[in-house]
Amino acid sequence: MDGTDRRLRALVDAMSTPTEISAYSFGADPRIRAFFSSVEHIHDVQGKLKDVREYLRHREEMPAETIFGLLLMRKEERTVLGMELEGDAVHKDVVQLQSASPITATSSRLPPKREPGGN
Image (cartoon, rainbow, N blue to C red; front, side, top):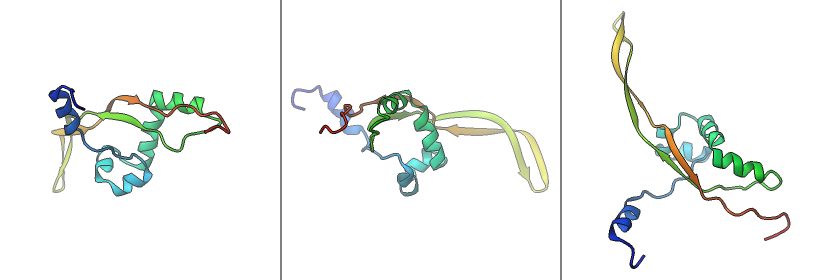
């Protein structure tokens, strides 16, 4: 990256390492469990990504084993009213902080389509 702006190099250096998002990584990587509630949630999210759906639709005759992409998430916190149990009493309209990490954008870089029988 000689000749690259030092600010860009700093951004690249600050990026975390790639992480696999799969049923296996859900069980093995606490970062994946922090973003997804279950393996089914991973599949639901992946199924809603337009780029992935389009790619798979065009690859029906020869599906890819692996798809690489960029998944961006943003932490979101909201104040909501909920209920709280204190001893035997249930208190209503208790202020609670609700945290979520929704997917905010995706950009996929997918391998080129290979013709059946080709390399």
